[in-house]
Image (cartoon, rainbow over all chains, first blue to last red; front, side, top):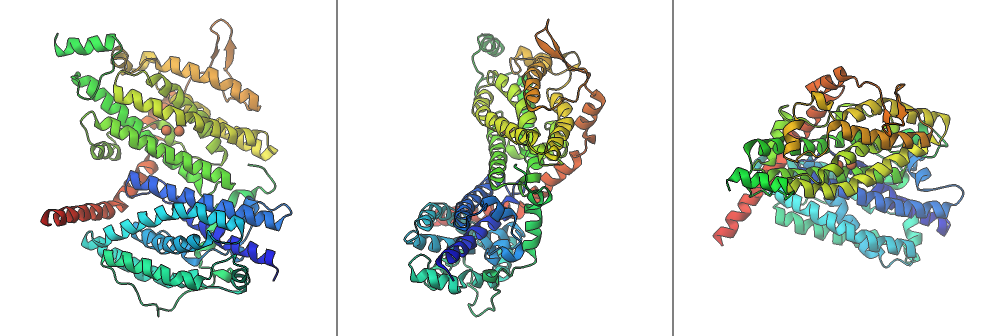
Length: 253
Length: 310
Ligand SMILES: [Fe+2]
Ligand SMILES: [Fe+2]
């Protein structure tokens, strides 16, 4: 594998996760539990779209030809998307969304913090910029975890179930292959094994404050995103998201 | 001077009425109704645009649209706070919305059926809102006037962004141009209805003008919107769907055809294409969020108790 191809693939993985989670968060628009929270959820969505655009454009530049952030976002199929599985999980109820995002935010927080030191300038700049945003997301969602897990009987039960339901999708975030190997060797990518223990600590810390139990690491984990193998949900999301550029090809919008 | 004389004096001298000032009951009630209706419009208005946020055709368009909707949510929040200074809570206002006691702008009871509608809404609906809101910057109630100053700045962005969408389509392929024209056809009349009934038929505007809540009449505002918008449509090569539309040299304004008031009043009364859908959506989100709000309250209460104990 050539370095350039690995770099494209690596950028797409991060970009796709932000894009797909951003799209999920946009589904909350006008559906939030309070008006204030509606605005906060849109904010997170906008941050994620911004992050995604930065790396989609980077991948498009590396690819050359006529690729752009839009061709990459709107003209790739399910099997050509490489977002972490957890980001495509449906919003469910508010607690499901919070737990899903919390697991992913904690991962991004440590990943982007490390990415700041990447030998690749664009990825380093991306880490720098995105870390600020994801720090806010992590705080926001940690606070909700603590609140919901110490709220009413209903909210406590709900959040416990969300944790059980979503936990099996966390393993996929840490999967690595030859793309990672090549780029880690060049000090461009981050060894996700080093992120995993930090991630575990963040989860433990917040769950302790929330009186929640951290599920066992021995749970069988869902994987597949590195190879573009997804849940059934992604196809529907892309069908909706890509509808206009697919139905009216070769037009400016 | 009596309270009423003091109040009238302020109105006469264009001194703003502030929340702690004495005001006639009807003045307060009128503002409660108008300001909450305005807030509700911002919030319900999120739905027809939210309808396209997941399907926006470019990343840039998606971000602009979502940020715009978020602005509207912010306007709603801001207007609810301003309306709360009149001694009624946001919860009460929202209950009035959900039970049909309070209205919101009828324009949001029309469906958004194509991407071009995102252009038409920004261009025409935000455009009409600006005409109204610029005038309201001078309204006599302080908190309302100040909220309008803040909101107007963002609205003019929205209007430009909407116009950009429509302009791109109008200059695009024949299919895109058709889409733009179709959106204009569907949104033109509802947009000019946004200014409300003719002055002669408007039973509400009389007091509001005396109290300087409303500074310009429905018909004057409507005319200024039309005069501003027709040249914009011409620039795009789009046709306003009104065969009676004609420049009147003498008046220095456009003459226009008769508005379909039967449609207008039906939509106001709840018979528009989306009235029920919009309220259902709002109620559903509110109910789905109930356990979350309860949990947050319960948590806050527990934290307070812990603090007290220590
Ligand atoms: Fe607004
Ligand atoms: Fe607006």
